[in-house]
Figure (cartoon, helix red, strand yellow):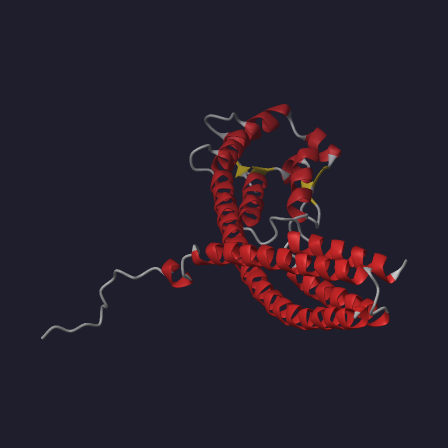
Length: 174
Length: 102
């Protein structure tokens, strides 16, 4: 039960405006739906609730010990079944396989989708960086041209100033 | 700091700005440098150091001109090597579905 509730906590942390990086990602509703399928299993008129495993309002599980203890071991074993042929364990195995199947599981699809997003973002960043570099070169070229123009102007003025200075110095020395 | 020492400081800053391609800053420093040189020459017209100051100024201007022109040529080369943006557009190979042959 603590493991199940931890997963519910993790999924809740990805919801809402303050949700984590997977907020709005389809994998969150897929996993929530899988959890629902896992716990809604009912076989031979037995369910988790009838065995004392109950839901609270937040979707977390807790154990009603008196109900659980009053169930006969055969009833519990019959409900659990095994992971290959029938019962809760078979249902749970199927649900988990649908999520975590290496070739077709929902997690694999979600990871591939996120990876595609990352690749697209990397490409966009590289393209934008090229554009920024281009704009920077363009701006630098314009500023270099402005500096050359300013330099020509200042050189002309200063050359006249130096010539006048030289003329005055020569006149004073005569 | 004496006005002549201040000119030397500004000249160093100007060289650093040009060397690092900070052209906007260099333009501002050039204006400061010329104003400082002019002030010194007008304040002390017969000073013996003025001839050396003029020679240093001309040398600095020549170095600046060569450096900035070289940088500008380098930048122009880089910009020319960038393909035009429309080259990235994808041309659709689909035939318009509304065409009617008759």
